Image (cartoon, rainbow, N blue to C red; front, side, top):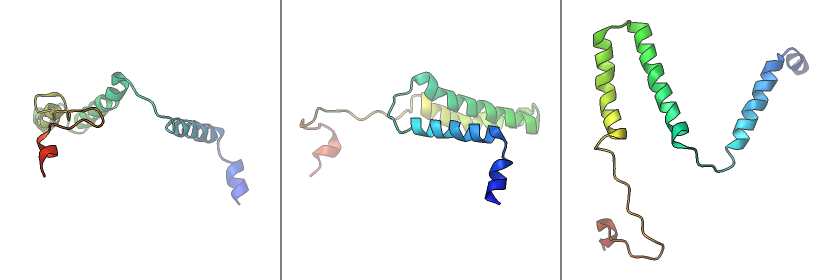
Length: 104
């Protein structure tokens, strides 16, 4: 029974399986992706979100305004003035000057 399933499976399924194995194996190696590559997925998801909104509601100004109102706080958090500050780094062994480190 299992042999029949494997024999009647299209060849592209095995190619896809090998591609996924290769992509998974690449994740085992540490790498530093560039800013463009990191930014690509959120931009694509945002575009697909707007596309889904337009495909369901048409070019309704209320729906687009609702999407924009909901997306604005996230955009400001990611790219605006409210972006959280990075923690100060100190060399190993050096005393930290942060208020949290001075607490007894």
